Image 1: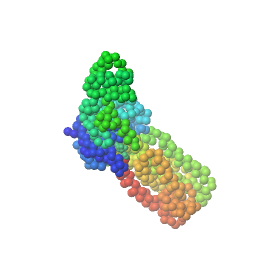
Image 2: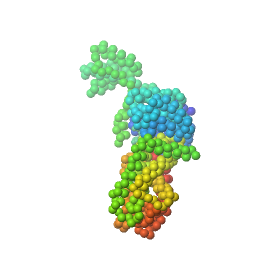
Image 3: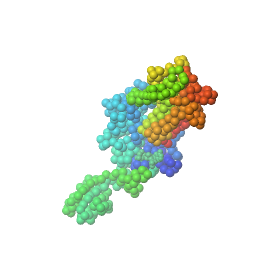
Image 4: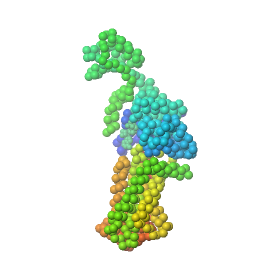
Length: 321
Length: 263
Ligand SMILES: Nc1ncnc2c1ncn2[C@@H]1O[C@H](COP(=O)(O)OP(=O)(O)OP(=O)(O)O)[C@@H](O)[C@H]1O
Ligand SMILES: [Mg+2]
């Protein structure tokens, strides 16, 4: 059964001048995780806000937990949890205050709300800071508290809008751990992100969106294959370029490309480090000593490059305008 | 029933915010208290009111009304802050009625007014204010003040939800409330104003509120008003009408705005 269905969602702003969503469709199987991957301005937040009943689309249909979002938003709100792009908790209040208040607004009794708050604080390692105002929390703690607030009534469907944007690597790792635990509990999760790695870690399936449309969708492996998996990148002296191109092409079984300015030769490889070792051995045999060698995992930029033929950076610029 | 409970929880949140940052309460009280003292001692000596008890009798209702008028700014900037932080989105994704949040907030702001008015009343008493209309009338006067603040709070909801920036909200609210409080009979008689302004000042809801409170606190209502004009003859009825009109307009408008906030 599908827990989330979005069909042909259209949302425009400024009297049609900005098309935030342009016939966007997606669905999520019950108990699975969909990663919605896209650059700034792609329409991620707009999608989440529509599915979470905060925004009405101009046209299209959305069903969450079997309930029509546009016709019965109040029923949808009983089964969803939402953690928006910016941690939305009351800065002045303490973590404990926040969770108890939200618990009561979910109509738990006072006792139950307190019990649930304490349980969540424990689960998210926030017990020690529970009595401090949120404004003294770090970014990661804030995010965790925000997530905890969206889990008060154990929602069937959870929306997380860029849950790790702005966190340092450690904070991100922690958040990933927390989310993975949640998913084991069987919640259906729609998560947006700008990082392929994050979608890779957390999602069963990925939908890549750009300009308000889904432009590709599939498992992380399938997408990477589409992008060409990892890339072998080698920088050599000017005089060795021709020979290196030949060797890298042979190892990759794909024509290698050359960035002349950087003297960077690169080609997609499917066998990872094995291909790297093979290439180095051949180069060594030919008496070539590379200046730099790397095996680069496909990034969001690469996915974009291969899907749209332009880089995400350009989109960011566009989004700013 | 549930709805009432939700409103109660939000109101309690407003109180909790005040408890956690007592500075807000302290400064919202210090400002009007300062006004009482400044006006009492700076102008008090030079304005001849011809009333027993002097300027402070006339002044207190004026400052009370001015203070509750600033509820507009308080509600507006509080809501704008919540919007900015995304808190409104969170509240809107909860299974509570959409009006609960704004009703709870307006009620919370009224509770703040009770505290502020009490402190001002005591300060006034210390510097010589003596209401003589009887306890019942005095309480009625405070009820009018609270209701006026409450009605303006709803204007604040609309301002707060419409604003793009919390700092602008403060300014906009002051630009609206300052002229209203000074183009009135609150601090000086309107009879000295040019004819057009005088007309405006007389119908100004701030003036009718001030005149109404003066009468309830046991003073002549006519200080600074053209004798015989409708608003100065019936200040309480006129004020009540203003409040009903304000709420009839701004409650539905604000509720609608909130339901589609940031759409
Ligand atoms: N209230 C609004 N008024 C006008 N345009 C808007 C509004 N909200 C969003 N947009 C536009 O809609 C498009 C999609 O925005 P959205 O916030 O959904 O992107 P996003 O994928 O979440 O981006 P980010 O990664 O920056 O969060 C953008 O071009 C944005 O400028
Ligand atoms: Mg976004």
